[in-house]
Image (cartoon, rainbow, N blue to C red; front, side, top):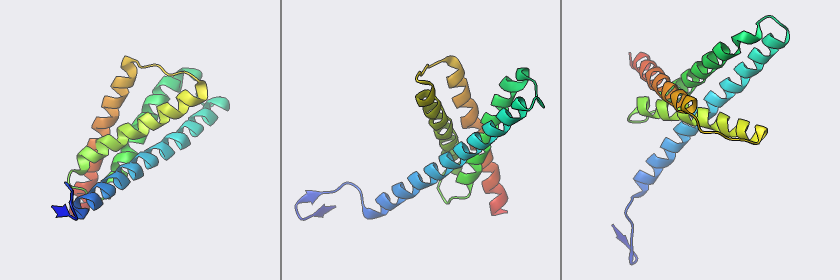
Length: 140
C-alpha cells in the first residue's frame, strides 16, 4: 500500500489489532502481578503471626506462582484475541518476569537460574490452560 510516496507495510487495521493484543497482554500481566503482590503479603502476614511455619515458604511461593498464572490466564481469557491460550501463557510469563524485575531492583541483584526457567515454563503452561478453560466456559 502506497501513500504519498511512502511505502507502508501494515494497515491501520493491523495496528489496531496489535494495540489490542498488547493491551490484553498488559491487562493479564498486571492482573497476575496484583495477585502475586496480594498473596505474597498474605503469606508474609501468616508467617509473621506464626500461623504458618517458616518451612512452608517454598510451598507458599509455588502456590503464589500458580495463582499468578491463573489470574493472568483468566484475565486474558476475557479478551477477544485469536489465540487466547497463547496470550494467557505469555501474560503469565510477563507477570512472573515483572515480579522478578521488581524484586531484583528491590534487592539490588539479579540471577538467571534453572529455577527461573522452570518457573517460566510452569507459569506458561498454567496460563495457557487457564485462558483456554475460561474461554471454553465463556463460549458455552
